[in-house]
Length: 179
Image (cartoon, rainbow, N blue to C red; front, top):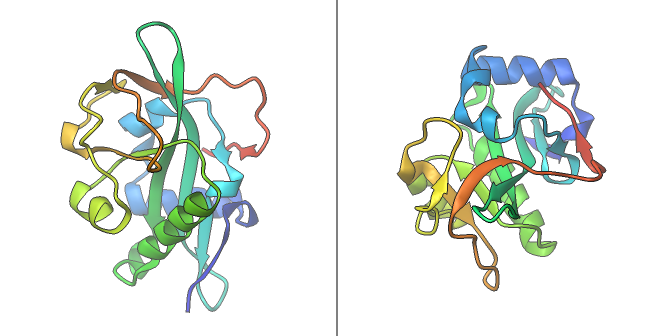
């Protein structure tokens, strides 16, 4: 049985160790890290999965980012990821349970549109993420276009063009830094 809680309940060292185990210690060079550089993860949209013995099995972090438009304005977005599962606990539905909790939370309490770099077949099939409206988006590093995904509420129009990057925030309430 897996228990899903707010990620703020987890120890930072445990989170880092899990991320290193899932993605390798060189993970900081990835484009996703460049998009959210300097940002702190959103505590209300980041979750941890714990096993029966209380061990940290998985994490999902969300970040405040923006699409910086050519006119200098920004469209706020929430970047999903990483979704990390301990190698020994993979293929047991933990990542899916974390994503289910996130989407359920966002659908009940709407937020800015979600975006991620991920597998379009997997994230599209279960949670309606798609690359259909991200063709005009740029990233500060390499990204396969079909993996640049977005999900917005029915009445929310996604921004058309711009460069993904950290969000300019006057206040950083509801966030916690994480390396």
